[in-house]
Image (cartoon, rainbow, N blue to C red; front, side):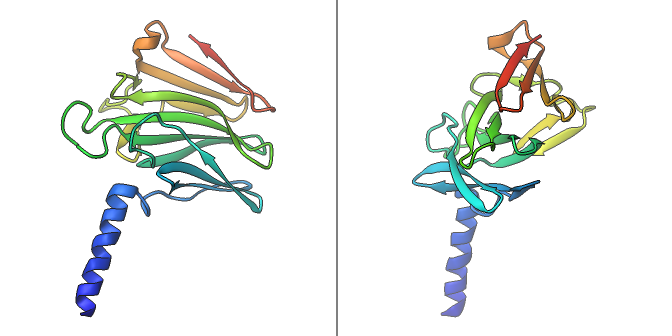
Length: 198
């Protein structure tokens, strides 16, 4: 009886990890707190701890039935102003076959932490199977690759400069920005984000 109970429990844990990413995502620490993803009411939320208070922030990814990312990475912080991170979602969660069956939809977000309640200050899609968006050298064998969930990207395709609070996004291909090779996002002390395409 105990073996059967244990087997059922292991199956539940396995499916929780595979389909809901319950245990797969790390807690990311920054100077004044931490952040992680949770699911609630079939939606994905960023749980942010600022000093000693927790807040939930809903993050829209524009995908049906795909509310928890398969990976997150904190790429920068402007102390007491903003958190900059990347979140990646499978393009398809139910079926891994067909167009975009193994692809990803990936966002870079700037979250304002100036107030007690955090808010999303800026969001940009940086990779997409559906929209054919790629970062520079995303799949190059000679590039130094970083991984977020199932998404791999070149270390040089996204650069955060903490000296001037600028984020450089180097595009490989973006059909909406065919004449743009680099996008520069500047974040000021009020967490206002300005964008420049080059």
